[in-house]
Length: 104
Image (cartoon, rainbow, N blue to C red; front, top):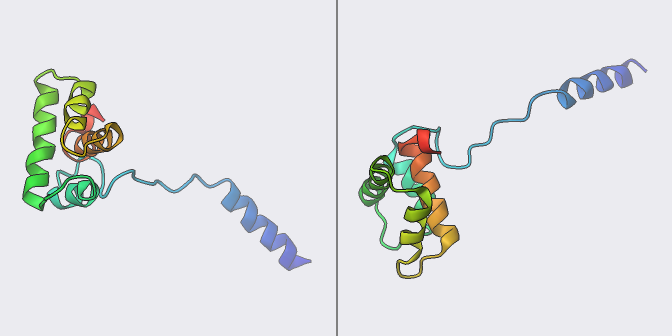
């Protein structure tokens, strides 16, 4: 009986615990990490390297700070060879996550 009560107490504690924080991308938000951004976008960008990923991510943030909208950037990127809107959205959001979290 004591084991049952102890098990129920543990279950009650775990049931009320906040969920674990899951990041939608590699690394913490605002990490400015080219390698983490590369890991996120590599499946969607042909010929990506860590250096090219960093240049792309910072370029996306520069365009946002110049006044381009997220939608404009997604539309432009989706027009690239083999580009899709969902891939472009992921690439832009990952850039925001890593390099310019104020836009995420």
